[in-house]
Length: 66
Image 1 (cartoon, rainbow, N blue to C red):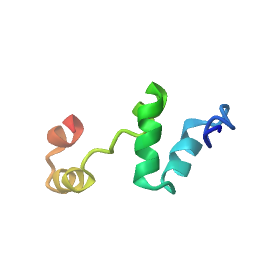
Image 2: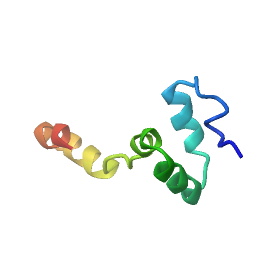
Image 3: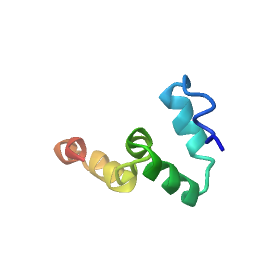
């Protein structure tokens, strides 16, 4: 059985990421383990709350390091 992404190998990464937002966590974990490309695609985003906190306090060096 083909995966959802194998049916459309020419999709841009932005569309793959957007469609991944609608998948359950277990399915994302499965895709991340299947292929190195998917592993890097679904890496967790940096801690957004901490990033906003540092930006609002003017700690741009810490924010950029994140």
